[in-house]
Length: 303
Image (tube, rainbow, N blue to C red; front, side, top):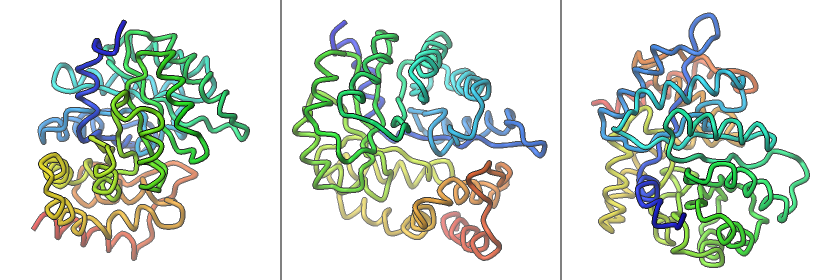
């Protein structure tokens, strides 16, 4: 298969790539009715790319069975209305099993989480992703890149070996490094997704990104849609107006090495009455002062 086969998937990456939360019921299990309602809310708001089992979905806190079920529910709700980019990871056999499961249920793409092994060589990074990509040649494959030490030449090597590696979720917080990495890897070969969401999207778009991931979109999809529309039209002042509106919310998510990243999103959803605020360890629920601030932000957005 050639890269032209993946035109639909590439287009889906050049958009707001939503990372849905995984809501939990009072007994601690995945709340499937709430998950379906949250997914439907995103779809109704015009979101057309969904990533079940992303970090905002608490990927590493879910069991393998829960991850499979979250993928199934998301694919069922998305139907033909959205493209699903299913998150996979852990050891190679687990990642391959998850990718094949997602494909069997209708996924068009998989996002491969950054390997969490403490010893990751550049060559081993290529081997890891190549094993997953080779196992699902019909799917678009998107590495989630958080490693600032990886040279762009290694991604170029992976792309040359695997035509279905079509995009990159780039989540190194350095716009200059991103610009250089993308050009070393192949600016036009891959779809570049700003993996640090709306706060970094304006600077990363200026260097070649055409999509961005979002956890904020769970709460305020209109804000995320407004930002990408502004960026697509080249209206950076308008994009920065959105940036200013979401700044404090995203600062709360990023504080203390993103300790409360998911908790802030779920607190906002709880303030809207859309799901419980529960998160799983090693995340934690927000304290009273933080809850009040999140509720105030959400109220301003709704005014």
